[in-house]
Image 1 (spheres, one colour):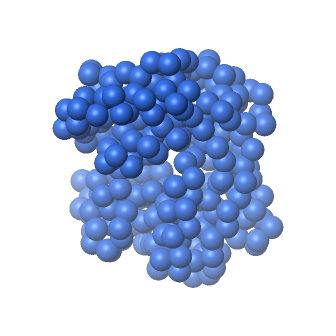
Image 2 (image 1 turned 90 degrees about the vertical axis):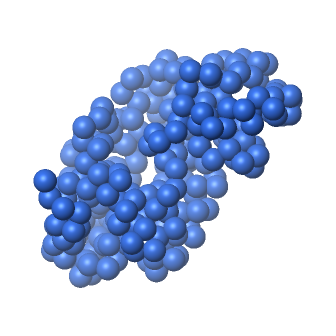
Amino acid sequence: MDSLHEKERHLERKLEEMEDVLVAFSGGVDSTYLLFKTKERAKGRVVAVTAISPLHPLQEIEAAKTRAKEVGVEHILLESKELESVEFRANPPHRCYLCRRIVYGDFKELGDKKGLQHVLVGNNRDDEEKARPGMRAAVEYDIHSPLQEAGLRKNDIRQLSMQAGLSTHDKPALPCLVTRFRYGEQLTLPKLEQVERSEEYLHLLGFKKLRVRYHGEIARIELESSMMEKAIEMRKEIGTVLQKLGFTYVTLDLTSDLTGKE
């Protein structure tokens, strides 16, 4: 098995071969490290692009803007239109593929307009071993995943990010808001906003790693096991606020534990 140093050097060699790169940038652990290394190693221009849509919390977009500035690259905010797709709004099991096909198509078009020869995304080796329908769209648009190709796993990237002094090294994973909905649940802007505002409120209370799963009138809250007691103590306040946000019933999922999960 390659050492961490060997994996990093493999990544660096790949990036050193590239000129004029567009990096898909969410501001998360993987894409921040990829952007940092691309800026460090690629020969030509490096531009970051972040998709703006109701699928992603506004606070994450703001964080991405800050991190791109810290890395020192041009940052483009590109409005994506997933919700305009009837097929995507129907929320089928291959929703990730439908989403990525739209977004990656936009990224590829932007790269062509800007004269950027390569479009990169921050998938890692762990993603390769999971069901990731969106990765098929990357292949279709000839978009590459250098972290994955170098064999870097999420824990590797966290360690290398910490060594590089990147603030994202311990950032919790935050999948897009669509993952809070069961397949077949029609996706609408009000529903997405309802979940986003609920999670934003819980973050303000100090819950770091959480999900608010949408089940119609019911909000099902998932937390780390260490935060369950706090949630129970604050149940009345939490219930009142989430009811004001549109849920009739607010539940705490006692079978879930987000501790250590990406």
